[in-house]
Image (tube, rainbow over the protein chains, first blue to last red):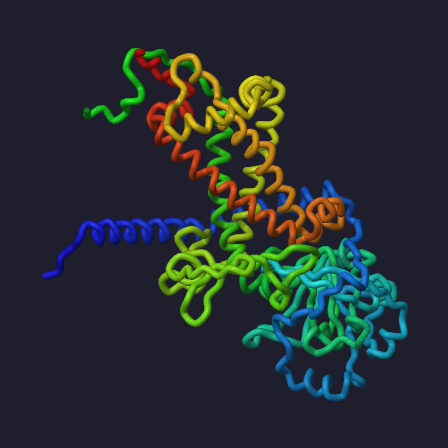
Length: 253
Length: 272
């Protein structure tokens, strides 16, 4: 015979009520209507932020003494595709950055060509959506110059960055709007901390869009496509994490 | 002996104590603060470490860590490590800094927690600003919340601390006004903690940093702001616990009625 003490009884009522509460709360969290309403909150945040802030404002740049002693690698550290790995072994000599979509002059630029173009170097803070930050030095081609070369068509509204890495076969991609594309600190970085960008940090090119969170800083950028609508790309939410985990497309906060 | 609310003797005066904007803001704020706290704890779960300064990631020295090591939960503050299995770090099958019971949502979902946090931030900020404007314009702040010079004297504060410790609450006419500890804590929350929470929250936004770089200077960097945000949230939790305790001790029915309908029954003077 089990003796049910009062403490045990109260305890089990507590656990029961707790799990009932959890189930109820999670049902609310998972409800599509609720998510839609909360999503409206995100749109409000984006519009409010753009309303009260200067769309050309620069992210803070730091001095060399502020740099993180070690800048952690996270996410993918080596794309699994054979084509990428072959390029990495050959140090990307035969690799080309493709710029296409809604452009007048589609481009295919070698790393040497990109590095020969005007370079911007900036020491900035990388903010992961999880909460940690690291400060590093990035050198690369301002995206604006790439746009000047390719000539976006009037219908172009977003730049989509197609990457060499994937998660369980789902290719990584990200997208930003033209406000961020033409921002002076938005660069395709080929150098980090005075060295060539390592594979762990996204060689040969990594997007730096400094007023956004870490998952927008796409590594292993292979192709920049200009589009008029994000609905046609991936599952339509504008990026790998946006599609797979419902992360906010506008990650200004 | 069966009267559940003996601190309220029958026949004493009912007075209109809490005006409608106060009541409305109080409940909206209570609702949004709870959701903000719970979704905030889930956001913290994504990287349960806190640092001071401009940067901080896994290899850097944190001042606070909540984690799990070989099946044992721990809280590490500075050099002190406290075992917390079952409460923090590990609870049930859950290996997360904060347990499912206190987070929104209950299982790990950073994207959803952020969605809730930022949507409810609007419900915190907009009514909060309106309450500030109304409070100052109607002189509620100046008349009811601002401590007087007399009340701020150490002797008076100490007397009120002693009264609270002995659970001697004001009666009769004195119960019409907030006492000094109430005033200090309400003013501290409304004009101190809540705005600091909002400002440190904005300091964690890379977009806002670019537009308002003074935020970074004010708090000494994004990671310091994240630490201050967490400390203020903890103080807010402490306030809520003490606030609820005082409501229970001061007569929950009467206190709740005054915050719902506005009408408060003045506790009768004790016969001397």
